[in-house]
Length: 350
Ligand code: NAD
Ligand code: TYD
Image (cartoon, rainbow, N blue to C red; front, side, top):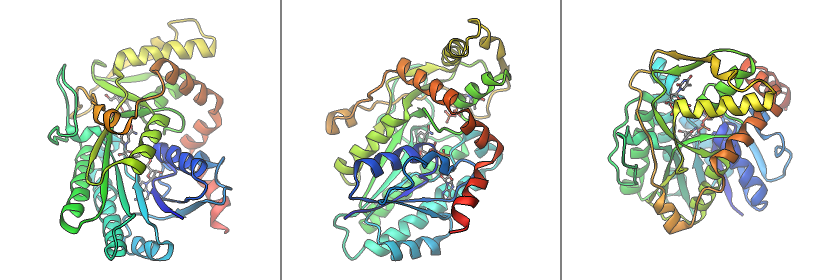
């Protein structure tokens, strides 16, 4: 019987990974460890929280002693590590939070895994979930491959790059079985409305300005979050130790073009005249150190493990807009902080 520690499982991507594993593998015990920062929300997992193979642990990965104790108590045999501070703009205003969680937190988990597994690494795996932002910025052409040199520009991407290096070093120095994947921008249900797509959906809903950084010419490669969770499942089960896998959507969009699609779909769904939401577009001061273009070559993952994205963007963006419109209470709760009360009611009294 496997005992898998998934960190950051109450966040956007983590909640989709936890749901997939809990439902698909009833014989696995899934331990979701999350600090429940502003970005972590147990509402995201309401549909599976009653399942017997799901367990929640509220904890901060920066607490190294606690990580050791939890490994001792629960005897995890693998880790899927997603917990992180994840928003570039926040990393510009508060880099230290990113250093603490993304670097120190990762080392704490590596230390706990090493300490508890070193007698026998067989059947153990430390799977680190990372981002394509570690590779820096592309010009108009080219794609990131697994061998692209690291060149991070924001405190967020620098902290993730640092954690990637530490993960590989624990394999090379101590023999810890590790795998890393680096994924492009995700979109879909449950993303905190500070990231581009849910922020703009939420603002259109409230007729608020849509703040486009610079001229809106930056390019991102968008992947539907459930496809990322499925890639993680495949890599976790079939990936090779010490390998890196790039995950991407083959789906590049200039920000301004993507924003116009969101406006169009929102007008349609809200029954507003076409062109109404576009009037909310407001060009604002560019983000400092704003990477021009990210684009992923996920050919290795396709060739070696047979993974390809299942959804076309046109489908994915409609599903996403539908989800946010059908879950407006979720948007209201996460933006007002009400879900913290939910946590207190559900868990503090237990
Ligand atoms: P998120 O911000 O939505 O969720 C992060 C989760 O981690 C939250 O539940 C939060 O409470 C938890 N957390 C934060 N600090 C913690 C700590 N100190 N201890 C325990 N838990 C803590 O992030 P996300 O977008 O779901 O990203 C998840 C992972 O995937 C991150 O490692 C990120 O770097 C990576 N990633 C994200 C994207 C993307 O587009 N969002 C793309 C590629 C890779
Ligand atoms: P974001 O969702 O923050 O992801 P990342 O910076 O990790 O790629 O931003 C996606 C793109 O959208 C990025 O080029 C920055 C831009 N952006 C805006 O133009 N306005 C905004 O309000 C936000 C949050 C992002």
